[in-house]
Image (tube, rainbow, N blue to C red):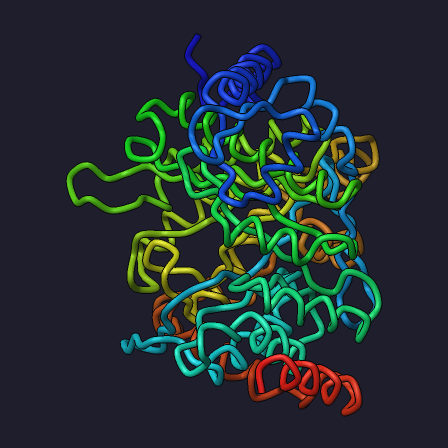
Length: 459
């Protein structure tokens, strides 16, 4: 049976078929777990060793047992005391992105710590953004980028932080930093390096951060035609198997650990240009599968909206608007991608502002409209009558903001009064928001404690 995009959600039989296929992969093909200690724990927990080094087979009952330990709710704290509760039914929240490059105007360069300051400050002012993700800062040694990134974001924003995980040593430092603010004010995660392989680094990131209630995103990132079958169903089944094995590992290390199910990082491969596709129609289908499988497992889901465009241009607008609308319509709970360009490699302040507007636009569309007696306005229509005007009625004055979307960025003026092109308007708005930044977002003692721990671990 062909699965069409308009058939929302995926039929139950399709989800069940994918689930069974993934269980068969885990039971008969297996997974490579590249850490002897963790592999040993898995064997003691019910996995069967294969004939090759670190090759393990996961019986389906073992998968079910460990999967049942994962909670359906994940609570993410911000450092201003607010909390976002993720569940399979929660509305989507939006995160920024990890990246390698920073784009400003027509200039692109490796991203640095001052750039992360700007990203954090701008994200702090954008209403659609709930979390800020660490980046690969060129001016910070790789082994301390996770810890330095956390500290820089904390200095410049009050929102939740998703750490760019780099080393187990960094995870140890982060565990020490966790009590500085209340709740789960940061989260971690890692991706299976497919097909069907959890690296030593990934496993030790999970292990070093386990035991402290730190939420973890478990990512499957198969590429259809390269690290997964070219058929989308095959890639989804494979990616799902990778995620399920990652959840088993996390629940073995910390029973009850909050986890986010993330199949929405899956890609296709452009066979003409030999590039990973992040903004194609198939990415919307992967996001839909992530949402449906997350609900099937009673876990919050995640996905990633991006574009192959290297500019804040028409292609970026087309691909990202399609992405936000399809991912939100599918019911994904965490959507990465605010500010992303160039196949997940670059972030732009102007694109962050544009994406914030896209999200609010899509939210208005998805909110729909009520059609009860009050909102059908029969009495008002009789009162105004034939050839009358509703513009000057009390009802219009009182209610228009509740019904009509009012953009903050898009142009709705006539041609003669039209401002600059959208990317330039967005850059100007980003500058205005950054100029209104009030300074350090937390008191000196908490920031000093983060710096002290960073120096203790890395000198």
